[in-house]
Image 1: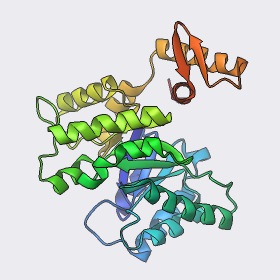
Image 2 (image 1 turned 30 degrees about the horizontal axis):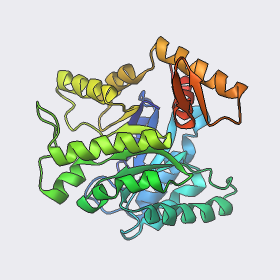
Image 3 (image 1 turned 120 degrees about the vertical axis):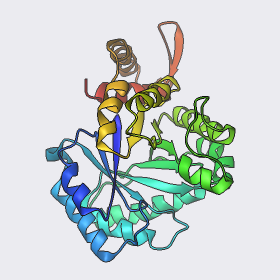
Image 4 (image 1 turned 90 degrees about the horizontal axis):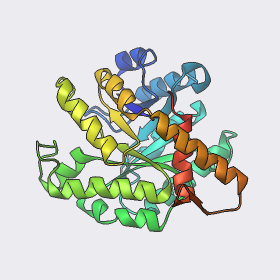
Length: 287
């Protein structure tokens, strides 16, 4: 799951073209764009998700919903659950209670649609406000079993604190760099996917390649995209190396030999189950 392409739920033309693109994950986004989410928008998104089942599409189908503090987020979720998306990106997360609220709603919908309990994973979008940024650490201290990944939202945070949201030549503004670093640390502490936010510039290929390289260097496992031109560089940069695959193979094999162990010494260092989870994701990635 290297590349996550966001497609506005109400953009029929982009949805039609999406299936032919080389994204690992297509995110049908109910929280993108200025237009109102209507019943027609929801029906269109649900139909697209049903038409492109994961087994035949070759990519995962996720949905990104509005914050639980916003109106009509339940309507978006209820509309798409019969289509069985592969996961939900949760926006505007400010407290662990927000995650529990969505988790409870998903539990009821899973029962209604014949899905296994707690089978719908979540990616938490953290730090979209100053209040949310100050609570990021709590997500690691009060984890939820549905959490599959962690990401952040520099554009929303910038609007909330009155900062420029694009990274400059010397990096992100200090408050945003702090949130970005916390995102990686929380993800690693949870054994979850660290998903870098989409880079706003796609026409400058060199700048985008640098952004991908920095994200990989800083510990992110994958990256969001807002344009198809970004998918190739993301897939190239975030594909595991042969050495990383070999190391992951060893980790998985050692834990299979000691299934009750929480920590093992492997190649002279201590490896816990959070690192094991990452090793399994590495092995699941395309070559």
